[in-house]
Length: 376
Image 1 (cartoon, rainbow, N blue to C red):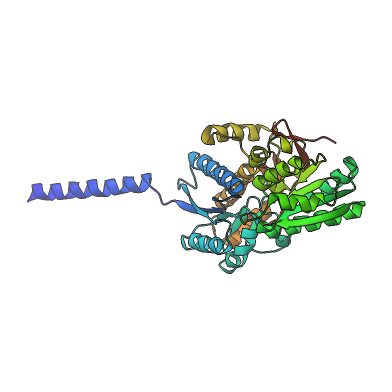
Image 2: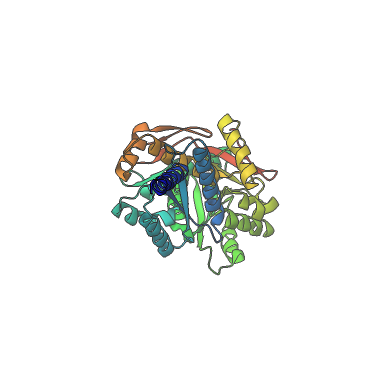
């Protein structure tokens, strides 16, 4: 009996010891969500944003995570569809994520804004920039500035630096919360300087339309320059059509188009294409160079602006989780706001009391197949 008793006690000791080891080796992960348009023609921005988030979380986990608990990323594709966007955000909320990084486009963010506020689910967007979301004390925050400053800088550059007194405009209605708002701000700034919009022509990517017909409408008005408000794919393709039609005057674009898809689909047609932006691929900041090297090694391609701002959105949320014990959305939001200034990969940026980001814009142009900062 004694021998059997000893065996039983030893067995229990081994079982409990093994269970304790499992608990030590596999602590419960902390869940963070990512949602973006990971499929379709505007997926370039979201894929790069997701990869930036992945790199941030991998780095964070390699340094020990949250007191030994790993951070787990739950990724969802909103398919650039409003109904799908609400569906996948609901899924993430039901998964009890502590925060959601996304969306990457303004239209998808506006589609789910009511839901995240109703459920008090914190969302930190890497690249949403519509001014419709400025100045709100809600559960939406962002690390990319609204585009008021961007459009003012580009309007000033076009009118005062390039001496162009009238332009034609193309804009994509598939992301109209971004494009119409961007166009409205640009038009106001450009007109205030003395410039004229000779024609504005909408189209909707993802639907059947003729690039040639849209271009013909714009060229009929003989503008001195053309501004394209669209993603990288369509901005590149429109640039090709515009050049093929014999238009040799300057082309300009919105921040949304600053991806390598612009260069891939535009080729030589986008040489000299100008835009205002916050991401400098030629930055010599040590933090950015380290990030770039690791990103290249991990994903096999250069980081884009979605990559950088995806990384920084993740780091803001991870910093908040690391610096407070209360992970409610209200407390995480206030923790971020109270800090205010964050060290980014290319310098500091600020998040104000409304959760809006502030940083300095720059002018870039495509030169020899790369984006180069313009000093003027």
